[in-house]
Length: 320
Image 1 (tube, rainbow, N blue to C red):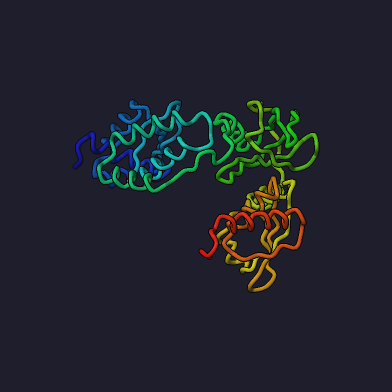
Image 2 (image 1 turned 30 degrees about the vertical axis):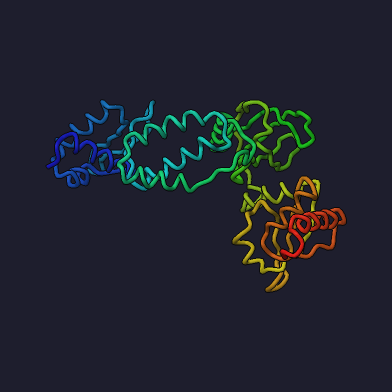
C-alpha cells in the first residue's frame, strides 16, 4: 500500500485524467478501503481541491472547479507542451501575458527533471521567433471576447476601421480566429445587420458585455478560410496569378491566409490573392517556390520586372 502522501498524489492524478470515478473503482486502483478513500478525499478538500461526491448505488467522486486554482499534476508530454506554450506566449503578440508567462515558466523549469529540461531546452534552441511577427493584442480584450463568444453575450466596443476612422460597434460575437500573426473576431454586426470580421488589434477599448442573444447560423463552415479570404480580398492590390503546379501540392504548402487556390488542371492552378502594395505582392510571389504567369494587372507586372532587374544587378556578370 502507498504511503499517505504518495497515495494523495496518485488520487489527485486519477481525478485529473477522468471526469468521474465511482468510489469502488478508486478504492480498487489505490488498493485501499472505501473508508480510507473518504479520508483521503477530505484531505484533498482541505488543500483546496473542489471534489464533489454523490451517495447511493451510482455514487462517486468528481473533481470540479473551485474559487482558486489548485496545483495540477502533469505527465511528461503535458509538461513539455506547457513549457513550450509559455515560451511562445512570452515572445508572442498578446500584450499582458508576457510577464505572467515568464513567471510560470520559471516555476516549471525550477522543478523539471534533467531529462525533460534537456528536451525542452533543445526544442527552444531550435525554434526561432521573428521579431515583429504581427500586431500585438491585449490579453484582457481577448479574454473578454472569448467569454462573450462562449456565453452568447452581445459586445459593444470602439473600433478603428481600415481607413483609421473610429466607430462604435454593437455585435453578437461568434468566434476568434488567428492566423498566427494576427487575431480576428467573427461577429454579427447588429447595426449593419450583417456578418463582419474585425481585427482585434484595432479594437480600441475593452469590450463591454451586454444582453445574451440566441446563436445564429455561422457565415461559413470553415471560418478560417472565410476570415482570410475576406482579409486578402479587401486588400488594395489584388491579382489572379496562374501557378505552374498542382493545386493539391500547393494546398499543403501555402497557409490559408495567402489567398484562394483553384485548380485548372493537373499541372496548374489559379491563385487569387492580395497585398497592401504591388511591390510586396511581387516579393511574395517570388517566395512561392514555383513558376507562375501574370497577365494583369499592369502594376504587378511592372513590379515583377523591377524585382527581376534588381536580382540581375545583385548577381555579378558571369556568375549565372
